[in-house]
Structure formats: structure tokens, C-alpha cells
Image (cartoon, rainbow, N blue to C red; front, side, top):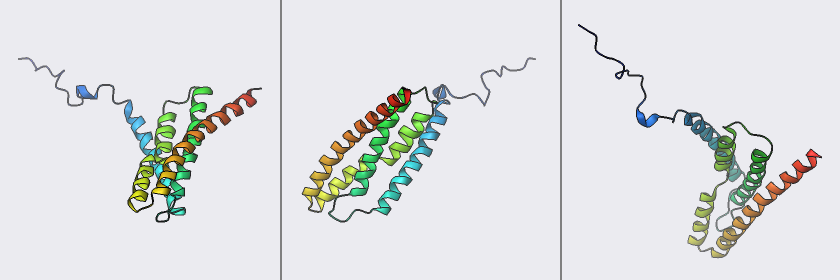
Length: 153
């Protein structure tokens, strides 16, 4: 009598859909931790500077603009200095900055302003946030490039 073959019956064997996904566990973890940090910082800003009913939502505006400055600088730093650790971009870029900046709240605040009969502030907020965010990314990237160029001299 011979023992049955147990090679393919091992309970510790991972299913075929898991193949290659174990490398993603640390990425998901750092995005989650970074997102929690960024979202907590954004929430603190909203508590510190609450929006007035029908008024311009300054806290969200400045959170998005400041976050975009940092995104511009970060983009230059991770592509221009040296190769960062593989978890730096997911943690800081996707996690922290993704949790901190909030274009979903921006859309909700525009809808709320329009819905409560304040189309003027809604339109101003709509336009200035997009323009300021784009300018902030450019300014952050440009300032970081200039800083790095001076530092290399």
C-alpha cells in the first residue's frame, strides 16, 4: 500500500488569483496609513477654520492649494534626486497628499453653495480653486527645481 500524493493538497498553498499580490500588501498598508494622516490633517484644518454658511470655503481652498504646492515639490524630488524607496510615493504621494487634498469636498461645497442660493461664491470657488491648484503645482515644482539647481552649484 502506498501513501496518497499530497503535493497538490497542501492547505498553505495560495490560490492562483493571489499570485504576485503579496508584494502589494505593504503598498496598500502605507497608502492607508498615509491617507489616515492626510485626512486627519485636513479634518483638523476644517475644524480650525470652519466654512460659514453661504461663504467661501477657505479651509478646503487652502488645504488644496497647499497640498498642490507640496505635490509639485514632491514630484520633482522623487524624480530628480535619487531613486526613492518603493513605498515613498504610495505613502506620501497617494496616501498623505491624497488624504490631505480633497477635490471631492470641493465638489460637494460647490453643490452646497449653489443649492443654498449662493451661485456667486460657488462660481468663484469653482474657478479659483482650479486655477490656484494648477498654479500651486507649477510653483512648487519650479521652486524646487531652482532650489536644487542652486544647491548643485
